[in-house]
Image (tube, rainbow, N blue to C red; front, side, top):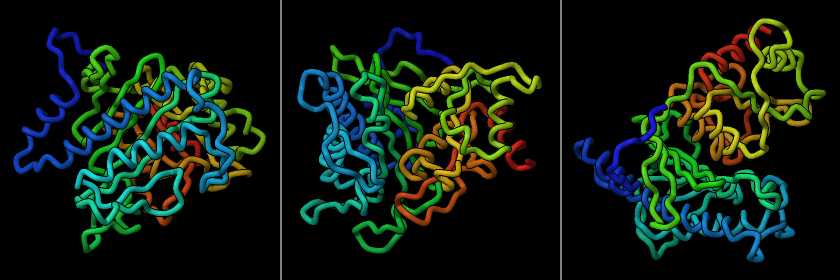
Length: 336
């Protein structure tokens, strides 16, 4: 990973425009979507920073489509993104982890060529204890006829993504994204109110130091998964032990491993045989980012980005991170 050491200040808006100029025929629509996402991220960051002072902590006493208790900030973040994105004439529809159906663009607004899929506040169950949380997003191009988006537009494999990324709200707020030409990170300067380029051309190490997995589910894992985790921890004597680091917020765990190298694993288990994490809102976007940084992401056998979605809230197992370490998972889980 190369950090930005130049004295010039590069805002995310300037960076997006400069990248757009490299592609003849670019309409600026994608650039506009990314700028809108950056604006929504600033608004959510402000809410997260003041969470302990305003009445936005705790549950909202209702469940989302997943049957999970929604946090107040889940709802605030979801509404913030929808309102920031629905009127620009760049999207034909949206889909959120927090909403059961496709989110249409209101009839009074123009539509555009993209569908936005997002997890508004990943790791929100940890917000009350000040653990980093994040927003994950993905963009695909509309494929159906007509102006308004259809569910089929959202149900495209991860290889169809034209952009993806995440925002992490921690000790600093950072936005990381890719459009298929490398991965770049921007840190929010709270005084300027601008995202500034801080991590250009991020590359994940080939071998990693960190293992991120919830070992409380070990009793429900298959023997192959147990063997894999033992390999990562150095318990079978075939490799050096990885350091176990698990926050319980996928964005936070993935971000650490992206910069320092490692594997985030959420295997299928007897309680969740289809996996727990959402393909469209979590796994596809982070897999795109990871591959663009030189890493890999699989569901235990095949490439995450090649899975054909069949439902908006489809789940999948995932092993994502440093390429050589993910390859160990592929070998052990495929060969048994």
